[in-house]
Image (tube, rainbow, N blue to C red; front, side, top):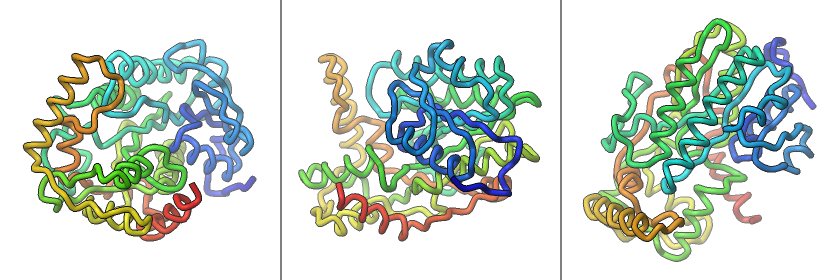
Length: 340
């Protein structure tokens, strides 16, 4: 296990909620490399995380007693756990993402934890319109078309509102996270591509931010260092990405070409995709189908619109610069995908 003389001596022990997930594991790995004693809490035991040297606690973060034991004696909490996705009952998102976050904040205060870094999402500001180089001055979306975004808005507001001299907090907003170990985004894209189920939505010219997994973990560590030091990040949120957006469909087709998957060529108009998404939502809702629809109104807008953000504030306050380029990240990811 390595050490890093630049890492604050005030951080010796960390807790990562959702430490068995894609982002959580990446943060755990980095903490262990820095010589930080690390615990995770999640709904299951995670043999891979335990084998790496972290201690696992099993529990539901929406239950106060579940966090009490895990949080004892830690200096910082990385709150990564969340219910993601674009479909499902509001109650599920509310309990995990809102109540769970509330319990984490309460537990930090009760255990006198000094720092809390929250994993948020740019979806909190997505209002169905193009966002081209927007920064953290963007308002929260007034009406989200998916429960995930709505619940994350409430949770992020709570975390940032909890910032004080006793509990310093900040939020990291990584966009479209990908890389080796990705259990969601790329495997689903490739599966749909192999079945020729993907269609370009809109004119295909939209630019989006993407975030390689190692860069996301790096940003969380930088946030921790800031909170332990000058704390200029206290009470603030930060967009995180590769720094340069990609054309969504060109990037997907580049990945597909490297994986010998047919290119996405057929198209749908944004209006048709939006109407189709609404129809699917109605059908799935009435029929109480639990599986995620192939299209929703939120997904239609996400696939058709540009949404990329300035990382200037993260650069200035946190010293964030992507440590893995998009090209290198894609090369590493393709190598991993070919072993799966």
